[in-house]
Length: 435
Image (cartoon, rainbow, N blue to C red):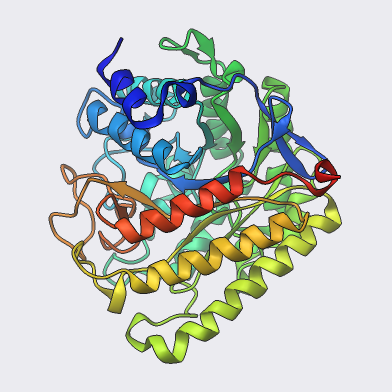
């Protein structure tokens, strides 16, 4: 027996170590797995592929420890990145990248993803597998556009003089760039048809995968018509290759910004999309200022509840499950120090989870909530500065100030909140099953 399995038996008990064997399905606007209701508290753990690599940035022993920690907390679903695009010389990126140039792959990283998926499956956990990124920290749509005639990427902050609006218009060209879209499709096809040497299964047959996610936070911006066409065409393309897995968008929802080019109902009413997603960002959306907690926190709390409620109501109207797959908040007073307090975070996590739980318990289509993001035992060597190659992988992507939203194993009070709500969610059943 492997060392990690011995440890797992001690931490979890042998009964919990048995992996569930079925695929996640949608039934009457709810999820099921092996014929049972599937509700979850999840975590964003986008760095797992890189941790699983035997090459630079990899640490398999650490990866296994983190999975065991999450499993012990009752976190059963991880949202992961399964795509990153080079070249590795670009700034503020996950490096090394999986796809060095169109059709050319880093074998060690692909093997890292294989290993990661295998370990998830052995713990009975599931993954939402993200296939692209609207933002540049993994390369994503902007890199595809740059490869296919778009020229230099106009990086947003932390680039000096960087502008988010200019960047978004550039990235949104992706949906209209046929060569870029074909490069992306070639990658998706390669992944779905790949055989995992650890599980001996093709990815299309892997029950540890809950869903294929088209991209992280795709936005239509000024190209909304082609954006919606891309959603529909890509969902149909994936379904033609894989009849087993769910497909979703990775959308934030309507967002507070009209120029984001989003329409939650329209984006998710497309037949090939099996469930809807939303993200909620109190600080990023300028609802909450950590230096003005007393003035801004109550407002942020009400905005969070309203945003969640309105999107759940829309999801009920078009008849699909909805997952709050990203939310987070920083440490007290905006600190990036891992030793600083997390009282606001604990309060906010409790409020978000409770709102989600009450909604799900009432019979709404809300099926899960995932926090951003798990860092576990890793710590930033330079808190408050962007990531550099060779730094530990945190929950904060490379372009962000490290230590911002990361949840550490030492954040015991936050871990307690997550664990309590994971237990509550796992015990939920749709109202009709309680009759």
